[in-house]
Length: 322
Image (cartoon, rainbow, N blue to C red; front, side, top):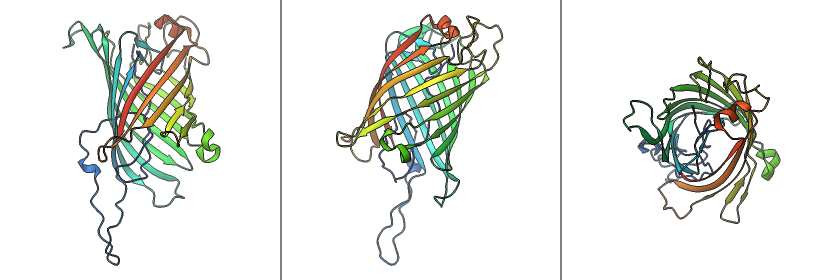
């Protein structure tokens, strides 16, 4: 039952020098941010006033999500009891920024970090694990990738992930995700959909449950939108309604329970997030979120491994951007 909760993680746009506000809700921890503080700009020789320092090219995002259970984007309902804690830590290194707004390539950012999952409910541990016969430590996933803003309002992100599972003797697996997104807010304003398309490829091992003796690597496509609206006059609360469909290739869910339909699962949800302005200046920009999502399984192979037609998850979290 190979799993991971998070898809590729886009880099927040670095339009201001630190500290800066952000509405990004994903999470990430960077060990030391000493390199994120750029030297002060030299004083203007003519005016004798300090120039505005350029935006930082090194940033970090730290997030902790608490969920009612662990449901992956691929429909694997891993842990359905207790409470699940999912810390995520990412560092962003802006390695290129165009001098002209008319440039085809706007900027490029390298991303690195990890995601993990801990549950209050104990599950059978992998044989030989230092945690004993049962463990609440479910998974640890390293993350590495690059994102590029190009053309007008387009972004492409290529992200490598590996799933190191600590339960059920699930083998190690590796994957590559390519995501293309488009920011349509310039045209639709408050009704922007923020569409995206994801191609997700298994490189080694399986990311889902399979009964095949020698399962082969496979892939799927994810298509989704994330419409939202921010109430600027009411604590800057942002309401979003993320929706997506997953279209898996034959053999991705290898159970033999039935044919692979065009849509393997669909997901709908609602999410509210807001900044936490009471946090002291200099400690990053904090935000909190609360949401619910429902996945419906259209693929008989998913139903066979999960013994259910769908699953609902309630979640909330706190994130900080430096």
